[in-house]
Length: 474
Image 1 (cartoon, rainbow, N blue to C red):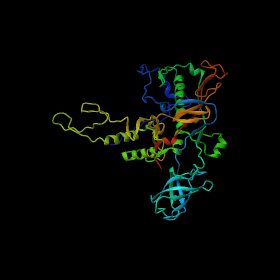
Image 2: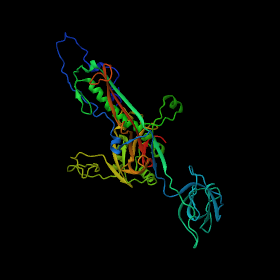
Image 3: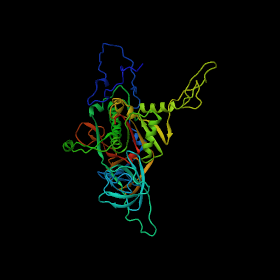
Image 4: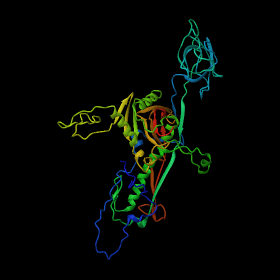
């Protein structure tokens, strides 16, 4: 039987812009001589309500002095083109190929190099040596090694990669040289703000409920609770904005709002990372396809999967299914079929661990529950199975080497890290200040205390080709 939809979890916002009637006693009937028993302390029915900590676990924070962050990432070392059309016919001894790969301005093939050629549709292969190159036209001529010549028909689209070179005795060296080409990426910080305000009279009003928050604040002054919750909410937004933010692609709105947006983690991995579009991989074959993709990318040895509850359980169930051991380990004369995974030597008297913290399949994968994807007030409450619904994110562990334009040299950086605006005169990592004339402030004649919060930051996703986003939708 499925869990019933009602009664369900509450999604009504826990904060409003007005004083709530539920926070104060309204029954002043002095004809009733009986006083109720009261629990003065709030009961924390939702546990820890914050969702941040993801970036603190996998990344770092470092200052920046510019409106734009730029970095360079290494390109591939070896040369391969996947859209090369042959002008030669079947069994031809020589052929001219035209390279039509996207973003190729000048082909990096030189005379004397030996190439492997394979037809994209048929799989037929040839080995050949390059005899002429026209970098401007994007063409090169080859002479085949095989006696039968070209093994595919004219106009066949082929993949070509260089595997070496061969020259005759007494000839000159290789003509021309290659320049390393980096890929340049950039991101820009966004300004995040929040504010809490309370008038001076309410600051002097003591409540009957002892309030508390996740950061340990406690007392009978209600405004303290609201201020602390505003602070906690702002700290959550500092992380969730880095996850969800997208560039302002709508030119009309960009002109009217003056906003440009930024590239959040999900946006970047969707754009230039790896995406599993089937929701959650549930079989070993599914993970084999992911491993195969990682082989073609950076092949980072250790990876951490931040998963929602569904993906986490699917991984546990897949690994458990690989362990089909059953037995009769129960009391004498009683057949007992129990799982033996999770904890070694499980018996009927032992609390069974049905979860896994990780596994190895070509690479090491460690699993961690991501509260942000489970919380019903955030992504956990979205339509399950809907296009774009994220079930997890795989993040490579460790750091990568990039050229930092601020430092002017190569530097080690975590794959994920936050850059915030800061200089000797201004630090905008996490600013908070109090204005008004109440609560110790003396900045204006406003009979209130206003607590302001501000941060200016962006997230840098280095080597996005090593990340995997698990979501629904192709």
